Image 1: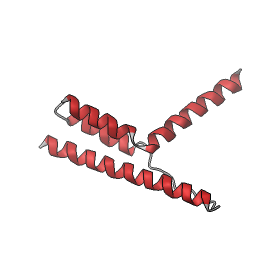
Image 2: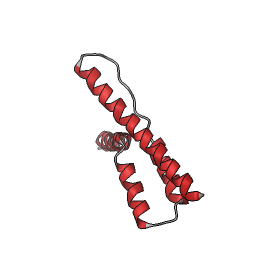
Image 3: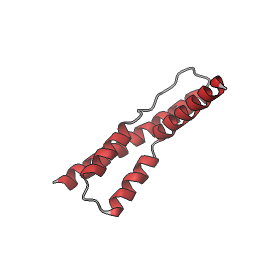
Length: 96
C-alpha cells in the first residue's frame, strides 16, 4: 500500500516538474517575442512531494536515486538556489 502512495507522489512530482518546464519555456518564448509577461514556476512543491515519498518508501537504494534524479530535474529548485546565492552575495557585499 505504501508503495502505491510513494509512486503516486512521484508521479505528481513528475507532473509538477513538467509544468515548471512548460512555464520556463513559455516565459522564454514570451521574452523573445518582446512581451512583458512572465510565467512563474511552482517552487518547493516538487521537493516536498519527493521528500514525503522518500520518507514512506521501503528504502531501496534505487528508489532514493530515482527520487534524487527527479528532484534535480525541477527548474524551480535551481531558481531557489540562484535566489539564495544572490541574496547571500548581496548581503555580504552590503556589509563589507
